Amino acid sequence: QVQLVESGGGLVQAGGSLTLSCEASGISFRRYTMAWFRQTPGKEREFVAGFTWTSNNTNYVDSVKGRFTISRDNAKSTLYLQMNSLKTGDTAVYYCAATPYTGIITTTPGYGYWGQGTQVTVSS
Image 1: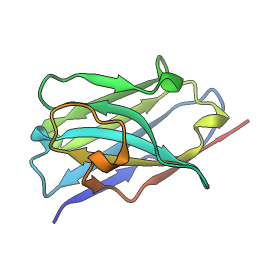
Image 2: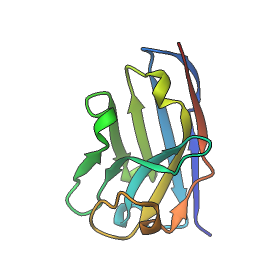
Image 3: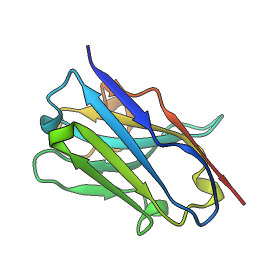
């Protein structure tokens, strides 16, 4: 049974930092491209960042470039998202996702496995 379990969300003031974690089980983590998405009420789930398993390439949505860093620890089967200089617009439920595809897919249908999400709230 595949499980992706996010943690690390919470309430933070604008300008602050948070680190999200996503622990995977039931998959060969080192052979999966991993990604973070986020969603706010009434909006579609948005790609935030991705990390391939073949060439260790990363990709970010423009709005988080220079502020967020995605990383992975294959030995721990864990994906991370370091979020700095947080803005109120970053408030959302953050989800991790996994796909065996070798490239970074920025749309939700490309991912077969999802976590339950963790809430990030940035106050002004």
